Amino acid sequence: MHVRLAAGAPLQHSCDALVVPLFRGETPTGEVAALDAAVGGAIAAALAAGAIAGKLGETVYIAAPTQPFRRVLAIALGERASFEPYLLARYAGIAVRYLGRRNLKHIAVLLPDALDANPAADASFVAEGAIAGAFETSVYQKQPEKRIAVEVVDLLAGDRDRAALTRGLDRGIALGEAVNLARTLAITPANDMTPTHLAAAAERVAQAGGLSIDVLDEARARAEGMGSFLSVAAGSAQPPKLIVLTYTGDPASSERLALVGKGITFDTGGISLKPPERMEEMKYDMSGGAAVIAAMSAVAALKPKINVIGVVPATENMPGGKATKPGDIVTAMNGKTIEVINTDAEGRLILADALCYARKLGATRIVDAATLTGACVIALGHAASAAVSNDDAWAERFLNAAKPTGERYWRMPAYDDYATAMKSDIADLKNTGGRPAGTLTAAAFLKAFVDDTPWVHLDVAGTAYTDTETAWQAKGPTGTPVRAFVALVESVAGSPIVHANGATTVAAS
Image (cartoon, rainbow, N blue to C red; front, side, top):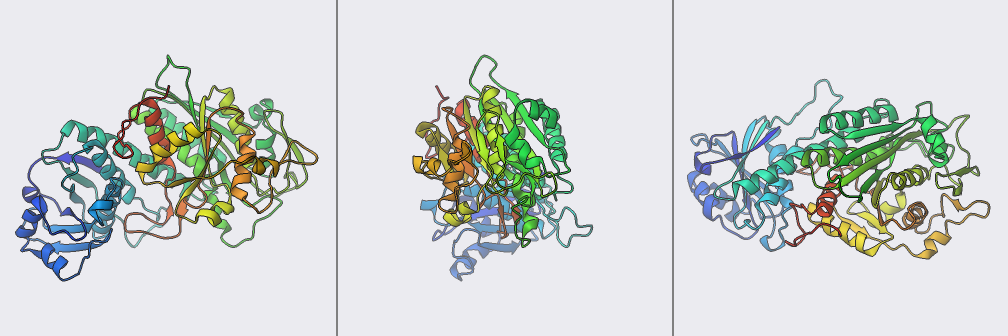
């Protein structure tokens, strides 16, 4: 898909459909009013008749065969008072999915009026949402019933700052493509997305973006002392890979931000076997790792002044004659011994060594992401991801960067009680603390492998994929937390386009 700026008045714009915004309780004004007059007042008539009340996502589709734009799609954005810029991504996504399913190839999007405070952010959200809206889940269907046909999206700039809009479009395109990359990696079935396949995908990202890449095989991981990571891989016929992508945007700095993502390409639970119902969804257990690889692709495209490493421990978790058994003791890279109580608590085992390795590579700040615990879904449902941290300032920095992206995160506590629950009678740690506070005991386990490095853990078990299609997004993988990762990198680099509450973000000291 090609997303671009377009000059000229909307009424003279030639395209298959013109997309316009509406707010609840407001009659059309400005460009929308002029457009409504050109189509005989059809938008105002739909509002008066109650065909569209203004709730986010409601639409009115109008034929305009005598006009250069031929059709109009009016999309409601809810109340103006509660409008947030990230909703522009949903607005564009709705347009692409609605019109693309009607076989329209060239559409134009009009921005709401009075959104001049941050035109770069507005353009970024439109581009991101348009590209993400085009994501298809029918990748293995030879003859899909419906495909999204949109090929060109014009952003009608009006008299807004074109330089800022161009900068925003470039960011939004990079981010939208990264989100869709993460979704593509996640939705690919495990027979076509083994650790080797995931490493190959990372190599393609590195080659395209000029990143450095290093892939540790089993022998190198063993030489590094990664007994925790390798214990999960023991039952699989597929060789494990520990993937490291490196972006050096500030060679003079010793600061290095690490993004770490769980890469379980399929999770059976191991010897502690999962129930068969919906086990097919465990191909998504590498969503954290997919997000790291995808975010690094966006970082490479955006070129912020910061050093970033992406670390993805990738393996299957399978039962078998060589598989780790409940009660086994394994040793992590930092020398800590771990009693494996439940082999289905495997994500924390691979992340333990990945976190240690990130620190060995010089990480001065860390964020990890994982579809780690079912307990997180019980606690927060599918509305938000959990965030746990050992550093208040770093947690606040992450939350402030993530909030305006539209991804939701809720900080949860890291009390010493949770670490106590992870103590073993026979080893330094055990890998599960039982049912109570499962998200937080898992985070407490991970905390033991970062020492005093500022760290935020994201449990995205409830948000990495969805069973429900929305007007702006296909069901399946969501791309969470790619948006938050990229926004955090930009924040720390001192070059954000998207801000919370219009605040100015400066580089970390």
